[in-house]
Length: 185
Image 1 (cartoon, rainbow, N blue to C red):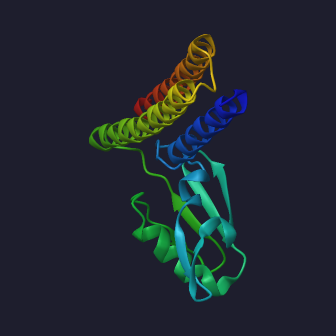
Image 2 (spheres, rainbow, N blue to C red):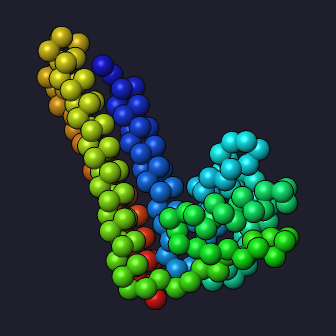
């Protein structure tokens, strides 16, 4: 048990935070954002592929996304994938590109989206707490095995708690910012 173990735990917590950030990017807010469509899977070339791997996605105006599929043979599949996604979007295929109007969110849909943010945040919180618990158990085992002194044990535990508090604070800031963005009309 040494400082490297604490740094590894910190890296894992940061990855959990980054995963949460990616999940938040895919939650609709009423404004066009290319990340809304990035996680959508399209049946192309005999397999499921991310839409972002098949097309460029742009937001030329606040209420519209334009999807430029590189191989036009995949245009119908991309259209179907967007339509079937949980985003509730209805793309318009003009034969060249997909235009995806982003309708304003209803009050009910905004509340659903904030609940989704809360669920995703809780999942990230659980992951961070679980990582903290794992490293604290390692610290305790190392102290029982006489690999650490009691002072080192408390110092490492304090570092882990400080990192956990910092990550939890970032998570809360991100969740609150997304909620505010969703509720903004």
